Length: 277
View 1 (cartoon, rainbow, N blue to C red):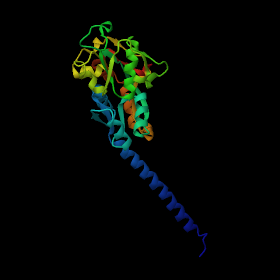
View 2 (view 1 turned 30 degrees about the horizontal axis):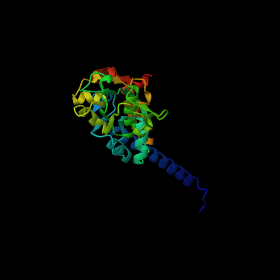
View 3 (view 1 turned 120 degrees about the vertical axis):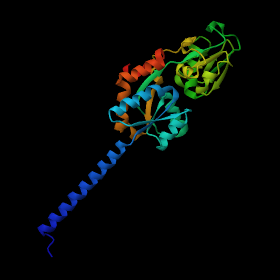
């Protein structure tokens, strides 16, 4: 039988077209199914109030988001890396870089968020000049936030650090400690509850407000709002940067007046909208 039969050619062409259409339809169906699933976003307690408002605002625009709250700073990255959640929002870039290195992750920043102030607080002393020789000082125990605490102690004039170490500073970089401070490292979220046991502690106003241990405005010194390196980011897996659900949610977080009002109410003077700077 001849292979040039026009009927056979037409049938073959039709079958090929049908197959392509079926694959396209299947792909579109999978994409639609993914879009219909809620975006799972991990966070910690300090960021929940404004994010909850953003979830409501996003829902009104057809974007489903499910918040997953964690009580530590290790699990949010692990769960994103494993694919159990889609993204998280609780960390700045230096923290992420350290987490990727320590955990063997390949997580990436998807969008910038807010910068939270950090201060030095005391229940026992009213001024930095009152800090005694041999004072017990608590700073964050993780590599990055601990560096921020040490930089703050230097800004306060209590220690001197080796120049150029930046957010990789450790206690080994202290070159002068005239007051012989006894610096201890604690999990960052526990610092708010350490104030009864130490002379001075690094404090994050949003956690202090949640703990109710001291007025967050009563810091003896703040590190300032201009340190964009410490801006909190939305973080995801590399392929997650193209997730339209995340992009739409971030836009709501950045532009919604209701979200801004929630940030102002919860964080007051202690944050900066980094996307505006």
